Length: 348
Ligand SMILES: [Zn+2]
Image (cartoon, rainbow, N blue to C red; front, side, top):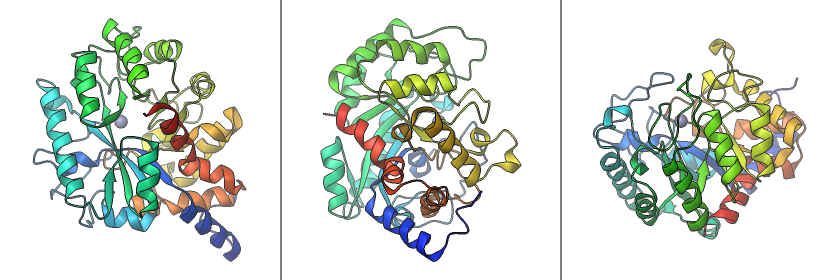
């Protein structure tokens, strides 16, 4: 199979043309933690060196995301996740608020390059002005266990995407890491689905266990997304989605973001690389067509592959899709058009 590495001159020109024209969206990164005084250590994933507290505006050799590197990689819209590490479970809402504060402080220092966005219109407007569009999400519902009232306040603070769990069980649902669980959503969880549908907030089904996933699919009136999950058929781990789940997500009009974490791309970590990630895209397209795939890097939370070590290497995805014969239109959708469609439909 032809690879992203051996494009003809003409293919290279075409790939870069598509990449420049597209609004490239990344639905998940854990970069906020690297700006914090007390960093969130990933509990799962490749060890990330955190010798130095990084910042959004300054290019670093560590981690994967900062503004100079986002510009180099042609990234248009980044969803920044607030992930409360288990070390903060005694007071997750406090930790989440501190992370949202860190996000605001970093964005405000870099307003010439990045804008916080609440909806689709603002994203398009920011990109038109040559800025990166930033969206705030919460990964793991621990800060929202107080129910819809807490959710509404976090929405007012700018949070537009929420996944109900990380790996463990909480008061909303059970994470996919609870291997013995047979439980779906709690009452708080069902209230959150209803309220998120009502106020226009996007439900993220990455990390939730299967019974919780099916409860959400049954209840939600809006499309849902999986910000950073791959195909179980190609890499059988609990964090990936089965073909049945992918079909259900697609039927709801949703999108799944391809995750660059080695262990979710290939169970044999030594074999994980960008071409293997592209196999996940091929598989999803064969299953449900090209309208339900996006990118969800998991950068700065363990994501990164040979050929895709940081955000500067995102154009390799475009090269790979060109090498595999995808049309310009489908590549644009995969790079960001599909996620933008859901943002437009759900966010107010
Ligand atoms: Zn995650």
